[in-house]
Amino acid sequence: MTAPGEAELLSFALTFPEAWEDHPWGERVVKVRKKVFVFFGLPGDRLHMWVKLPVSGPMALAQAGCSPATYGMGQHGWVAVDLGPDDEIPTDVLRDWIAESYRAVAPRTLVAGLAR
Image (cartoon, rainbow, N blue to C red; front, side, top):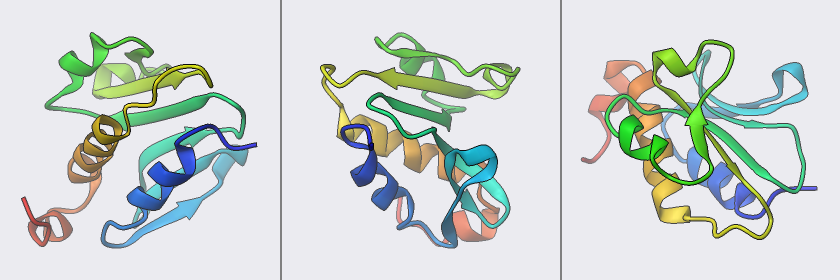
């Protein structure tokens, strides 16, 4: 089972240079080279997503369904998004956050080639 909006967000994440899908620990993640820039977690009916947000993190944490990521990653700018099947999925905002996370994690040479 795939959460609402997850397939679209996964497809978007895979459009970035050298992005690829992996499944460590049975979870779905998208990496750039060997570094994860978005976690989608285990399959289910809820959208679980972690992204690194060094710029918009404080704003993101003020939104419903968002909290600092666990395992100590929240202190490094990672934000957890948890939305249920009845929640509105703010796809445009989540796409912006995926893009910010990519820029935060990807090598500068790859980021330099992206349009602003």
